[in-house]
Image 1: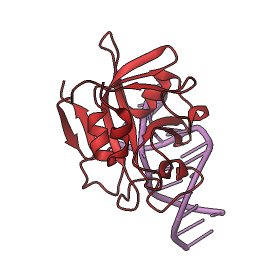
Image 2 (image 1 turned 135 degrees about the horizontal axis):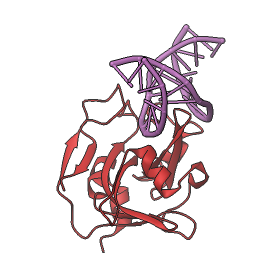
Image 3 (image 1 turned 180 degrees about the vertical axis):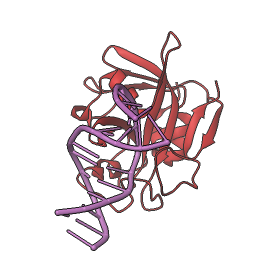
Length: 165
DNA sequence: AACAGGATGCAA
DNA sequence: TGCATCCTGTTT
C-alpha cells in the first residue's frame, strides 16, 4: 500500500489528486473518495489560512494527517484532511463519495452528514481509534480538474479534482 | 431562481 | 456592527 504519510507532506493540489479513489471510513460508514479540492495558505486567497492562523484555521498550519472540520453558513460541516509539513498551511476538502452500492454522495455538507461527522471530530489524527480511517487506492485514478466551487477569489486555480469514472 | 439558516472572521 | 463566506433543502 502507498505511504499515506509521504503523500500528506506534498503540496495540497498533488495530494488532492492522489486522494481520489481512497476509501474513507468513520465508524460504520465508508465510501470511495470521488471529488476533492486543495486549499493552501498565503498563495491561496480562497483558503481560510490565507491571512495566517486564526482560532479556526490554525489546524491547517499544524502537522499533516489531522482532520479540519468547520461549520459553514452556520449549517453544514465540511471535512478536510490537513496536508503539508508543520508550519505550512494546506488541506484537502472531501467533496464527494461513492458508496459500495454505487450511490453518490455529492457535496461536502452531504459527505459529513452521511458519515456523521461534526466539529467534535475537528483536530483528531486520522487512522487512530477515534478518528477517520483513510486507505489510499493502489494506483492513481483518472480525473478532471476544474476551478473550485463556491469561492470568488482564487478561481484561476484548477484545484478541484473529480474522478473520471 | 431565490432564499433561509446562522458560525466565523475581518473590515469599518 | 455589518457583511461575505470552501452549502443545501425548500419555496417561488
